[in-house]
Image 1 (cartoon, rainbow, N blue to C red):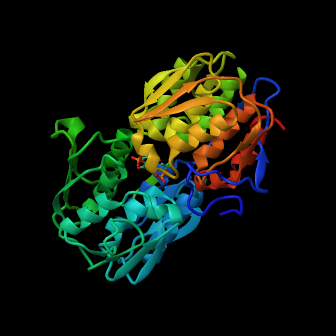
Image 2: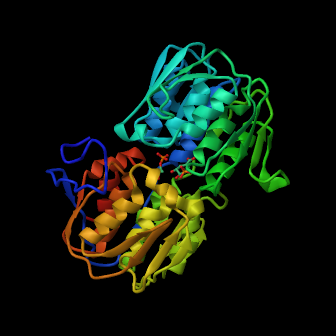
Length: 449
Ligand SMILES: O=C(O)C1=C[C@@H](OP(=O)(O)O)[C@@H](O)[C@H](O)C1
Ligand SMILES: C=C(OP(=O)(O)O)C(=O)O
């Protein structure tokens, strides 16, 4: 946390400017770069949980090492799991060796502001043999957790949250969990479903999760959970392969220890692809997977519609901008985490955009709809919040401070705008370390500075 940042990020309040300002580089010409993007946060944190719950040791290769994944690794270590630094089984590439062990309490887990840690670890803690205390950044107290807390209680866990339905809380692990059928409303976060499925094979009766409620966001992330569970040997029934709509079932079983290779984080590739679009340049991201459940893969379609062109070859994904950016009318409910970067590009387009289906972003790292509206308008833009998204009418922007509210994707959104608008300063750019260890360095290198 920096002196410039309020303890409770609230974009509805004026954010004081402070000394921690990063001058976002202005692009004097088209970028032409190859950018190697570190591993996916979502895949790394699922791989860690599944490896920790396995019946035998496993490997997580090319893991992302950022705040969210280091918090996940540390949380699992606190519960007794050994995670060692090492090279992979083939002798190349950095890897984590994960040695599962009986899960133990008492323990204390710091979730930071990581949705994956605050949602995926409480079901693991229910399997520990003692109390596990969960706490994190001030914002973690405001992010929804009721789906996980209520579900775990239904499945047999004892949780002390002093009636908050949120952090901080203590999960009183009893060495195992009955499991069974549970109904949850996961319309505020798909991570509720993923959390219960990831640990479900270790519950005595497995788990059947039934979503009841409004639209479930971020379906690709649930597919990612199902795919990765299957990769470690779990049996999963799900709606997309003949199952009942909104119902997922994981059969109780031992999980295998695998050699899991982490794909690049395609959502973190977003600002770099956006740089090609905004500057009329070209960016190649190596190792772009031919098939993936990551929502960032949708950028190929979305940024193409906004004016670029892309080609997937052995070298990776090459995205080329034309110098012209078009507005877009798009439902981002499945790929909500791409919204800040798309909003930034849309603010520089030649026609208005409507981004829909993302009301749940109000409960992300910060209220992203309010934050984007306030900060883009602070640079002279014309953004209005709708019930479930943003309406963006491009206007000539001017330089100024772009506040980030402890949100990595606000910082990268500001950097995108800074490519085209001289004098943009990003407050607390270090917040990008949540999912990218060195965003400013990568950005500067891309620009050849
Ligand atoms: O399961 C995951 O890894 C994620 C699911 C999504 O969460 P929500 O469904 O809460 O939006 C996404 O926004 C988040 O960045 C990562
Ligand atoms: C919503 C996000 O993160 P989290 O995993 O903390 O929910 C995100 O990375 O955009």
